[in-house]
Amino acid sequence: MGDSASPRSSTGRDAPDPDDSYREFRRPLLVLALTTAIAGFVDAFAFLRYGAFVANQSGNAIFLGLSMAGRHPTWPESAASLVAFAVGTGVVSQVRAARSRSSPSARGLAAAVLAMSLWAVLNVLLRYGHQGGLPRVTLAAAGGLALGALATLFARTAGITTAITYQSGTVAKTGERVGRWLVGPGRGRSRARQGALLGLLGLTCYAAGGGVGTVAQERPLWVPAWAALALSTVALLLRQVRSAR
Image (cartoon, rainbow, N blue to C red; front, side, top):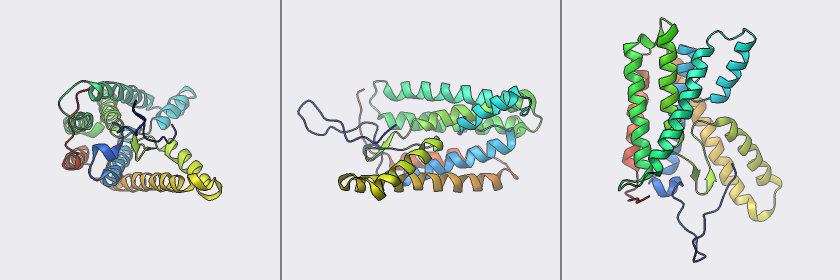
């Protein structure tokens, strides 16, 4: 996942990138900050409630490894979240790619809000997984599905790869960009600085969201619903772009 310039059309001119947040949103940096904070918020909540992440699938993969050594008894929750995240990403990616009068970002956002709202309702019905067992596995899957849908919302910001949920990649790319910023060739330093600052923005917002989610899980009433409500406000920042793809 590297940084890329805008693709060129057959005429040789820069063509609009349909997956770039500057094309999809009026305030892309605000949307990036808000959605990444939401991901951190619900990820911390889910981990403390279910023993599994809903956004950090690298963590869930490690939990599955720990379970093989008998050190992580809640492995079904981790497995359910991981599989559901992949399903959510796969399905919503196809929803975004479908031919429609609405924009890909509008369709992806609607799917993410719907999945997050479903997760909120299930949390109330299943008492936030308090009883453990199948209810908790179901909730981990519902959360993974919602965050998989959310992960499709951002691909690039000003041609620079950005992510809402995959923060391991953000850390790696930020370190790479800081190195290019400090000692790289002169022509690329400005872009490396921009990418590094975008990475730091994402990491800061994810961590801040995690802190709020940690506090919120102590009184969890409708926690995913608050995330769905915050996510729905992103619709106000959508650009009015019609897409035929």
